[in-house]
Length: 155
Image (tube, rainbow, N blue to C red; front, top):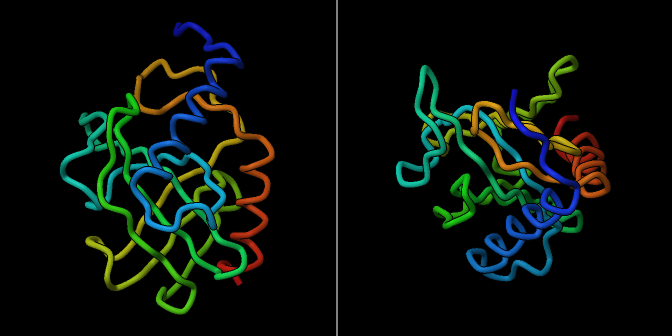
């Protein structure tokens, strides 16, 4: 059984995710930032978390309520670096949805390497026995992101 990560360390990890996003994305101050993770879908070949049956990828996800834009930045699971940001404007995507059971978010767009990206944004992750995600505490931020996604993208 994996050791639980403290709330303080989870919050510090979240701040590290935000710092990576701010350093890599131009005009990043207009975005709120959350951490997301999912099975890799070809958005990067340099920042890979873990390869087993699947490739797991971590993301710093910025969302701008005023511009209806999501910016996805692949990041290293140890917060040591980031890939290239990908902008997903509502007008440029084909479809977006939230799974009712798993709460996974899927965005489908022709310009993505595998035509989609799928990830989840958890409010609190303090246990990672498989070492595939970043333990974070982002309760209010995740709530705002889910509300934004439901209102602006998944209609």
